[in-house]
Amino acid sequence: MSADVPGTSARSYDEFRDLSAWSVEQYLQLTGWTRLELVRNTYGVWARDDESASLLLPYDQTLRDYRRRFREATDTLTAVTGLESEALALEIVAARKDVFLLRADQSTSDGSIPFLEARRLIAGVETLLTSAAATTVRPRASTAGRKPALVTNFMRDDVRMGHTLHGSFVITVLASDGAEEARRRNEWEKRITTGSDSLSEGRRDDDEELTSFPRQVMSTLASGLRSTNQLTQAPRDMQTVDDAVTAGVTAQMLEAVQDMSSIEGLRALDMAFKWSKLEPIAADMPTRVLLDREESKTAGSYIESFTKQPDVEQDTIIGQVVRLDRSEGSEDGQVVVDGVVGKRRRRVKVPLSGEEYRRAIAAHDQSRPISFAGTFERRSRGWRMALGASITDFTAPPEGSATNTDDA
Amino acid sequence: MSAATTPDTWDRERHTPNGAPYGNLHSTHTKEQYSIAFVHALATRARCKVDGLAVDDEQVDVTIRQRAKRLHYSRTAVDVQLKCTSRDVIKKDGLHFSLPRHQYDGLRERGIIPKILVALAVDSEFDNWMKLSSEEILLRGSAYWIGMDDQPEISGESTTLLLPSTNRFDVDQLVDMLHRIDQGGKP
Image (cartoon, each protein chain N blue to C red):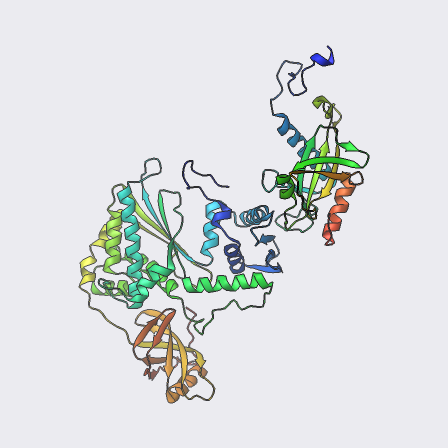
């Protein structure tokens, strides 16, 4: 159902224009549905794994009954999820994109806020995202200055603004790996066109075990905002600042929070995250952070401490070898280490020479923690160590048992 | 009162014994609503589900489904476009129904679920459509159907479809039709 605004091209939510068969299928695939039937270029039949529901999803928009069949499918999803219209659309998008919702909790007049305040909120969100991306590339207390290409590419290619939602004033930010999404869509179109389910759904390269950069940025943003909230309750000392920097707080994040919170009549910044199901998410990652006006003022008083904080680069990772990779006939190889760098959990690819690689195999066989030293390099989908990394230590295993880390 | 001075059935005022006036729904909408009620009653007698009544698009009025398990898709379904006429359209060989080309072309567009046209012929006198008593409601009319998915292209600006006399739209034919669809056949 949609309503056009007379005399304009503006309209309310319209399931046929705001949702696509591709996005609905991605949602189904990631939320416990299985495709039972695929009729080339025409439709797919999906059923929930617990057999509690099934639906037909049409693909071909030129079909006479496309809209009727599509509506039947979304009606079924509404009945299954209890969500309808914009809420259902957001749920569908959030299956494959991380969603950040910033709601300015303030008194409004007829659902509106002053234009200049809206601009401040948008600018504040841009600063939060840019700063989170920059400190993801290289953790530091202040991200002022020229940004790495990875950050500008992220802001250009991977971040989108969704429909604004009702409920005071809500900004919707969607983040996903743009190139990966385009690849997945292309794969999907091939599958629909050929009627074959045999095509791979996985990533095309060997980076599948690494977390995508957009996910890392959004995780940094979430943990940074949570830590900003905690700053207001913690004793003021250097350890507190160190911990906050490790969590992703930057001077720019604090400035943005302070600026947005100073809007007249604002009671709180109510921020929520919905995590895409395409990648695993740490269990302790926040889904909501509420910063009230007074807390934001307190957090703002930390800005100077952050701008004076020296940059520290970590160059050692301690953890478990979770993957070994060596070409046939080669002595050298590459391992993936799941471990900690400072206080941060990371998965890092480490290229190793023959001798070092054999030691890594031994550590893997014995499930023993191992540490590597070297220079970290940020790549589009994760961290690597530059060539020349070396094993610095086999940490002694805990008595009586091997140690395993959880998946990040 | 002579026939010449009797107001048209749609212009005649009707009141309850207590003097309350009937509604003023337009004749076209009255026919539309009646045909839906007619088909709904037949589908109910066949214990089939009628879907999509509130939706008015793609020249489909309702979807009739044989299986009605909640939240479950079933391929045993047919889309139905309803027409209602009080003209003298029933001949020996069936019901002859004229359609302008744009409507005809819309009806024969390809879809996922098969589509039929159901035409309901009713008396020209509105008061004869329905008989109500404390015991029953009797819906009067003769309905015929025709599958629309394989209709040929036409060159003229209109066409007259023959809905054969063998295609009476009744409970048995509806159930048989859905069975054929379930077997992968046509209505």
